[in-house]
Every structure is written in structure tokens, then in C-alpha cells.
Image (tube, rainbow, N blue to C red; front, top):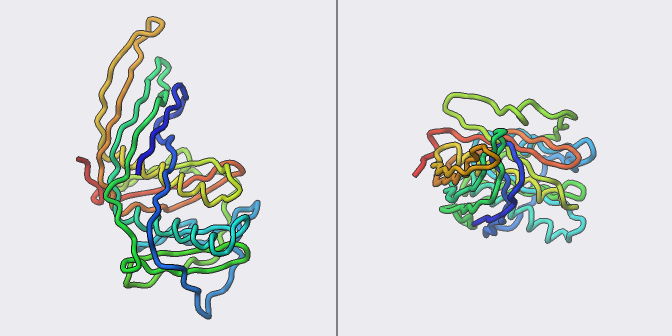
Length: 268
């Protein structure tokens, strides 16, 4: 998987402006939920309600995906949810983040993003032998939880109402010994909102990869009698145990808070 963009000049706070190239990963088809699983109203309304597992995460290894039926058929919506869940599961298992970013450090201190080339390597292939799916249809949405086989899938849980105001972690990720956190954001630019969430996860994953270990090569140049730093930031990091632990959205963007244990990463 690779991503190459060129947006210079464009002022950003630091890192994370990338576009998601979707990983198409094979997996088993959805399995209907059995009796005893209540059909809770998980549809995203202006109040933005989502299942607890999707909002807050849980221990264990799994991936979550969903899709609205409209404007898709039920089969297409189900396939999209499965793809999202399998991709999420694969990123939880292992991802090697490799590539580089080019930025300019202006006299004011701002970083001007000038492009990047990133690849996701060594991503496990999710197949029917390594994946178990649990599917729940709720109104006009389908939700899928994927977990390695053999083994149970965690429950989606009841619906959670996201807070109306931005949580503290949006601008100030937690600080915890032995744990790295990153925030990823993406615009909701499509009728199918679920397309934005993987983009936000992807951006958080890249930032975690760069946070583990990166190499900066600097080249200064004069601009209006000030020294402007042109930097190439290279990364080659293996990430294991990537987790999304919180989500939030407003009218235009979705945001995720992701974490990884330092012991689950290694720079090359």
C-alpha cells in the first residue's frame, strides 16, 4: 500500500495529512447473529451514536467495520463492512510503516507539508482460516466484528452518545509511560460516513510509526534574510498492537485516538 501526495504550500501543525489507499483483504462472508442479541439503534444521527466497541475499544484482537445500506444494496453494504473490519484486524496484528515526508520549517515555526510517499508492508493477509466474522444488521446499517480464528468475537455493546463538544484528547493526547498515542482526523466528504473512519485510523497509524523512530535530513536555504529548513523525514517502523481507543466526530470531520505499546514497535 502506498500514498503519494503533493500539497506544497499548505500549513499544518505537524504530521498526518495523508490519503488512504484501501487494502482489499479476503475474508469469510458475514455470519448472522443468533438469538439473544438485541437490535440496538446504532444508526448515526445528528447526535452521533455508535456501538460501545466502536467508540471505546476493548482488550483483545479484533477489527470493526460498518456500512449504511443507502445508497448501496444490502450485499454491497455487507461487503464494504467486511472489508473495513478485516482491514482493521490486519492493522491490529502487524504493520510496517515505511517511507518519507518532505516539510519546510518556516521562520514562524510552522511546518509546511510538501508531500510524502508511504507504504504499509508486511500486513497479514486475513483469510477464512484466520478470521471469524460476527454480523449485526440494525436498521439501515450493517456492523461486522472480525477476530482471528479460532476464537470468539467481542460484543458490539450498546449504543454510546458521543459528547457534543470536542474531548480533551483531540488537541492533547494522553501521556503514559510505555504507551504512544496519536490522533488521526479525516473529513466526512461522502454520503457514506464509514469511508472517513479508516482514513482517520490510517493517519493515526502513520503518526505512531513516525513517533517510534524517524530520521531527519535537513537542508537550509535563505528566504527574506531568514533561514528556512527543508526537512526529509524518513521512517521504517514495525507496529504491532495498534488500537483505536476513542472516537469523536462533528459535522465535518471524524477523529480517532489510537495507541500502541512501545514494546510492540521497532524502528529499523
